[in-house]
Length: 293
Image (cartoon, rainbow, N blue to C red; front, side, top):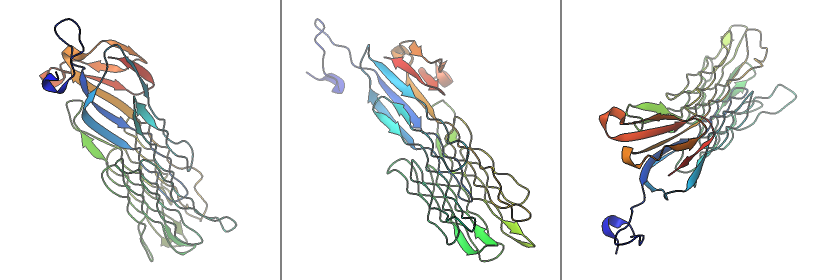
């Protein structure tokens, strides 16, 4: 007998339906590269995920990519994995060759030199691809924007006075009772030398970092949102900006009926009961831990 879609467990004359939850799992955003913006962490959410009473579920929150051109780390809840974002692509320096953006939850933006490089590919169902870099000459280059959960990263443009690609926008969730946008892509970096200039891009909504160039340094993706870091560029005299925006860490959020919340966790998540007077509890992990149903 399967009343309400649940199998009776055989405890006496009755049974206990397994608690069902809603989850949001966002991977860590990638760091930007030399011109390419970092891809956002993968974004996965669903309702009706059944837990088994008494079972302990592991939660892993992915860190953002540090320094320059590093992938974000995966976030995991139970069997659900959201991939870290793909790194921002590199630009060559005359003796080295640039690179495409990395693949990940969302793809990183493409780098430049001695040609334009493509953006990275996104994991299916988790995000969007990064934009391509653009290259005309050593003084006319723009990086591609990293992809976000809700939109692809924009391509860099030219020919002269062009724009680096903006990061792709993230996706909003109201799992906590209010709308928050997660997993925005980092923007590409620009260039300025001897009066010829390109501009850097804007990070995508949902924690994407801005690109850098001229006097402006790239910015980091936002922790807890899985945003990609902004790509760097060239400064006033053609010097390579050494820094790039770091990726933002991911997050794992569980939502369940107040009556189904067990109260058994590790890792010090933030717990809110009767969220919005709705009778639901949210358990928010910004670091590793466990939840026992």
